[in-house]
Image (tube, rainbow, N blue to C red; front, side, top):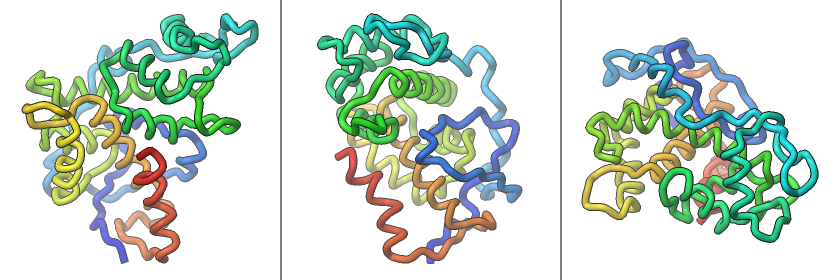
Length: 249
């Protein structure tokens, strides 16, 4: 028996849209009307409109240098340019090292661990080791949403997300994570930030948030009454957890 004591909160109108996982990883809708745990006094207000899209949202579908419609219609030129700059062999696909180069130019340097998680979540259905233009555009848009959340909750402008900021940031996208789990997350991802400043760097924050979102969405499939509790078989538990702790290591 696994019990979260109602630790994931409802999807309310005050919360900004949670960065979406690909459809294959997010098949169930979830509208929970129960309240969050008492350690949240009230929901944080929504971010100002200026913070909701710090990077141009892809609108996909432009013709690329490859001579075919590789990106969905209206993709911002900066997104296309970032992809083409690292796709040196003009294959129309990029691997994890090329993705790391592309994102490092647009945000900051991403760890290979975070890159591998992103490759796993946004993988091309025809090539598990590389992603194409559509996956890249979706990934870029998703990171823009995470960046908006990071900048809003990095209240001291340290460039890091501390424990309380992480709590509020995850709650803002619908996840009231218990204190004990928050501390585990900080212990895991803070050690990876490579700085004396306590807190999560942006890439560690993205990885942490995507893992919490992915595992919570999978758990909710086993909790149709939204009680925060579920009975899992050993096989179900292992199938749920292993892709997030093995596939991108």
